[in-house]
Image 1 (cartoon, rainbow, N blue to C red):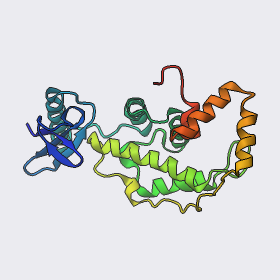
Image 2 (image 1 turned 180 degrees about the vertical axis):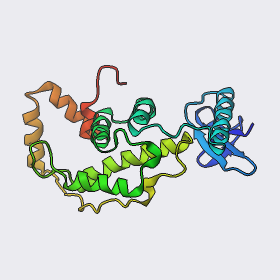
Image 3 (image 1 turned 120 degrees about the vertical axis):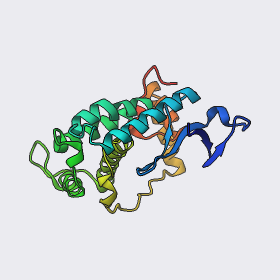
Length: 229
């Protein structure tokens, strides 16, 4: 079994001080087929990593001999795999749910393996120049479009890891040019007035304190609930 733990890009043994928190990896060369080299983030023990390795080898075998079901639709894969990834990796669920909704509008029932780089560019163009339900021009900024397309790329990457796709079609799609970030710094007097105004709303005051002291985006902040630690 070709499973091992890796830390900071290097293979380590059980004597390494970071062994307990390092991730399991699989590296397996199969004659006449592709090399399996990937992380197994869900594995907690060697037995789980070895089980994952056997499954990966089987997927590669099935794919080589035409036994893999390649008819899975974009929506089916998102619901069965990507949403699970979002839950397990503590990703901003509020933002991701919005991105998924927009992507499903474009790819919903399309078989995953038939999506081409041009399909991805068409989706990007629709997000950038399309119209909303009120028939007004889309207000999505280039940075917003890029984040949505980044989500699309991650979906395809997961499909590659699962052996459903040979390559990620998004690797051929360039990101949109984004304007330089705006500098919006408060003066000392504005900061004083700002905190004074917040004192009238205790909840908002605490949220702002949390945002100032932690690297959280607005969506992540609003997604916090009583189960967050």
